Image (cartoon, rainbow, N blue to C red; front, side, top):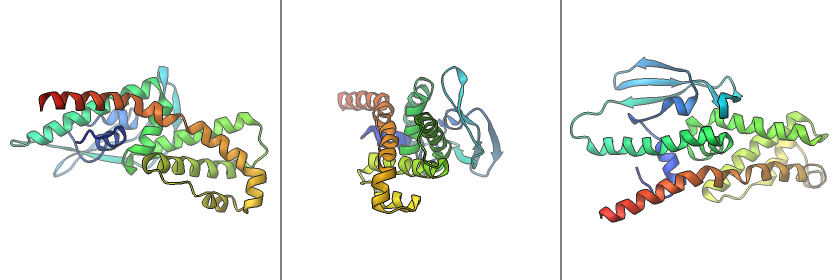
Length: 221
């Protein structure tokens, strides 16, 4: 895998088949193994946990699958790739214990799409818990739709700099710009501000590993 940036390293670490995949860290505590012709398919289920084993999200999610590739002779590059993925995955696993929200953001924003469902659900649960403390009069169902859009839009902005389409947010709520400015804009800003610190918290530990790895490669080269 490549170690160009922290975002790219996070994505590649959970992309494709690798013998070093930490399936427990990706999907909770429960896994089931099925036999396949090309290897073992590991079906991931479970819950997202925080410090002291507390559950920050438990949800009936679609099953996410990965395949453990059987490595044979003449496959040194694949072995190295698996080791590099395992290195990043171990950092991500420690982040899950030390900062569950940052872990959820990293998986939701940077991991391949199939790995994102439970973590996005956990972020949605976090935003809705915050909303419940604000005492806002807005309908909770509408707020949850807006919060889910906020997570996806902020993730795209974080990954590729894409600007957020507020017209899409207004269409989700079924309101025009005047009503948006008067009733929803401040709530949107509060939701977005809750997510703003998470990219730096998620990428910090990965960036350290990427920089150290690149420095060591330069020394060897």
